[in-house]
Amino acid sequence: MNIDNSNKNIKEKFLQKIDIGPNLNEEHLLKNEYYGMVLATLATFFQSFGAFYTKVIQRVYPTKFHTVQFLFLRSFTILILSLFHNYYFQTHILRPKEIKLPFWFFIRTNVNFFGMAFFTMSIWYLRSSTAQIIATLAPIIVFILSYFILEEKFYMRYIYGLLICICGSSIIVLNEKKVNYSNNSIIHTFKETLTGVIFGIINIFLLALVLVANKILVNNKIAIGTQMFYVAISTMTYSSIYSIIFGGVVLEPGLLFMCAIHGIFFYLGNVTNNKALQNAPLSKLIIINYLQIIFVFILAFIFLNEKIFFTDIIGTIMILSYMIYNSLNPLPVK
Image (cartoon, rainbow, N blue to C red; front, side, top):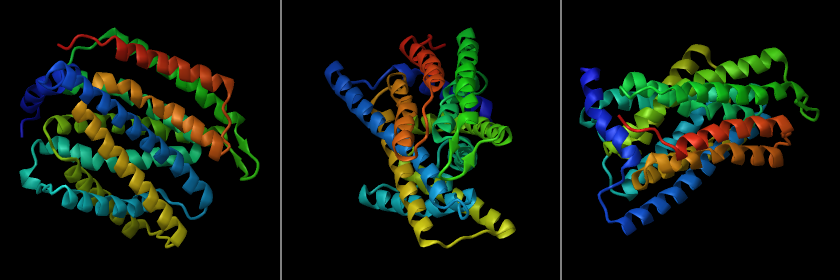
């Protein structure tokens, strides 16, 4: 397979659809965009709840929680939901040989496991809000990857944005040393904080790949039911291999239930997000995605007693200001 040639064919469909909607009359297009924005907001909440809920599971089962087992258990829920989804909507789960763009499909369905693993480990060592802030930097990496993968023109704005976001996230990360949950004897040391940050940085590169692949698959009409089915299969496969080699399976009913609930929110977040992308251009949805930061801050503050420091707000404003500016002032598509 010649990836370079396929990238050239993908480029026009992928980049142009960011700012050009379907060929519909203006009123119909506007309704679609509003619908897409509502779905994007809902998807953002589901995704935010997933990040927050991961921390809840870790708090409830501090000695029994294991990242790989967590991903394995919730993959059962994702598999069941994908089968039900395809049955209910009478959609066909594509066989491997029927899948268009197999390279990007492989990235979408397999890299997701490793991205979620590193994000989950990042949350273990950091506040859920801090881990989410780091994950929010993924769009910056998408811009950079687009230069290499999709041959998009590179702009200095990306470098400025990267520096601003690094400064903002660094301010927030520094607050980890102030964290002390006395009831649970949680004190973040420098080593733990650094470990969480490293895992978070690895995640944003993997997440950026998944975001690029997902948008390409959406534009090529690869059904979300098919995507989620293979995401579940790949997650179960990688988790099983790890468990066979290293062991560590815990059959705790409460843990099983909580992992299943997490799988439901993960699935809903992906389905609603893909539906949003089908109804509105990415340039008008990307701002809504940054609500994840606010949702996670609020949920963690209310239910996990995670403190919000003044410098958290400053760092968040720095990151959001650049992201919103970049979204409202899109660069020309080349």
